[in-house]
Image (cartoon, rainbow, N blue to C red; front, side):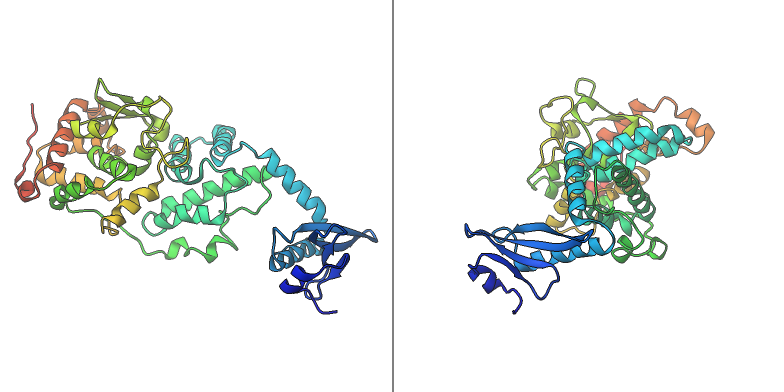
Length: 404
């Protein structure tokens, strides 16, 4: 008899099992009540077994054939496809409530004692918080897929290759941890060999990009004016990042409990900082105006679409593209700030470095900066906000001197 076709599946009314000659083991099952479903027949210990694949109302013939081929592949590998499906369902139930973020935090806590290098211990979770959590931190660890992982990695792969490769390895480690605990059964979407190596170029062959795309500081006032005309939380978050010279992850991960409005202060906890140390950020009038009314302490200042999730870093890039500036990156505005400080102000370089929360290599300089230069940094950020609000025509003429 000829194999099954979509037309035959729809028209077949005879009760019984109707074999598909295209895919071994696949049958269309028609009951006395007229319901139809696809089933897969295989032998186990000399006895026939029937595995339901789905109703014809839910899956197509093509999908049924694919499921039958998968089941047959498992059987040929010595695995009972029915038992494998039951285990998958059980793992899915066990993973309910286990988001990627929750599993990552558990992984970090269980491995923290083995991280002797304090810098490594701080950077390990910091990269996840900056890039992975905003994208899929709230997603079940069992549901994280290749598309989610590559969406996070691709924007970094050519601009921050080292960071991207470390991030990939850390995502892979967290998902391996979930696999080992039975909270996930699907293959690890962050694995490199035989998977992501077919999607992304080898890190060693990536063209080195020395700097993030940055806007010349002379053009910034005009850009700020255009940004102010953009709607949405993304535009507000981008403006706040520019006015505070903050890193993308620091801004997107900000919660209301970190802000002291009376003191005009934003304190970023050490676990969210690249260097692993708490960082105090003085807030200018313009930066405060972007915050609006405070929310609950644990709420994100720049919330995303999903409840309880922060804004995605992709939203900021989309804002730049909408403005016709796909050549720029959010991080690049830190370079814009640095150039403006060096060329158009008389503030000492130590103040600029502290404002950018740069690590200090020189022991003498580190000792000098122990007090974090907060008062001078407050003056600097007010001057920066004033420059950003300058009329484009007069921006080149502005020169800010250090106030005593």
